[in-house]
Each structure stands twice: as structure tokens, then as C-alpha cells.
Amino acid sequence: MDEMTLDFIYNEDLIKIQCKRNEYIIDIFKKYLFKINKDINDIYFIYNGNKINAELKLEEINNKDNEIKILVSDINDKNNEKIENKITLDQYKEIICPECGDSCLIDIKDYKIILNKCINKHNIEYVLLD
Image 1 (cartoon, rainbow, N blue to C red):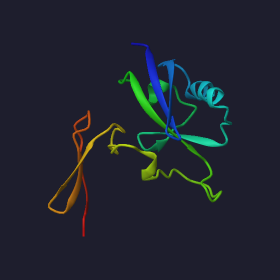
Image 2 (spheres, rainbow, N blue to C red):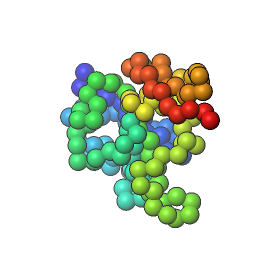
Image 3 (cartoon, helix red, strand yellow):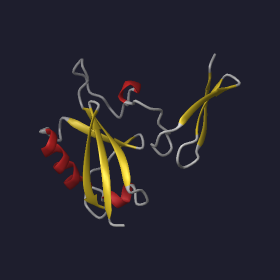
Image 4 (cartoon, helix red, strand yellow):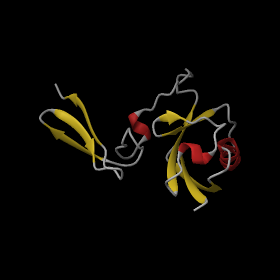
């Protein structure tokens, strides 16, 4: 399959963009920015917990899925300070697997937080609750 859907999530709004896997990400961003009437210098894009390099082709960041979610955030926070690759928990409505960026479940066992049961079957054990 050559077609792919990108779900851009910005301020709790979802916009879907259809694109081809061999498109450059900067061109896809331009389509999205036109729809939301924003400048590329005012926002940044996160996929899989990392800031996206706009000079890559889409197939270079994900070549296996037909639909991926991209988190869009303002460069400046409420206090007008720069945010550098910082993702806050209130930007998500669901638990996100840090390995693949898909939804997962959270379990608490033996005073440990465990993220598991994502689509790729990752199992990540985190910190103790104490």
C-alpha cells in the first residue's frame, strides 16, 4: 500500500491528512498548516515521543502502518517559554506506549507501574510507587 493517513492532534482537534509514503514530511506539514492557518515556526510535531525531522520522507519514520497519530504542540507554552521536546500528560486522552506511540494499558503490580498490551505487545516496567 502506497497511501497512508496521518491523524494530526492539536488542541484536542483531530485532522486527518491522506498522503503517500514517499512524500517528504515537510510537504505533508505544509498541507496541515494550511488547514489550521498556522506557521511552521509556531508549532512542532511529535511522533513516537520524538520531534519529527521534516526533511525525511514519511516512509522513513513509519513504513508499516496505514494510519499514524502525530501530536502537534505550540512552541511556546502559556508562560511564553520555549518547550524543548517536552510532552505533558494533559495532551493525551489515553495511555501511550513510549516504544511505539500506540495506545496501551497501565497496570500496577508489586508497587511498579507497567505499561503493556499495546498493538506491538511491548511490556515496559517503570518506577516504584513509593
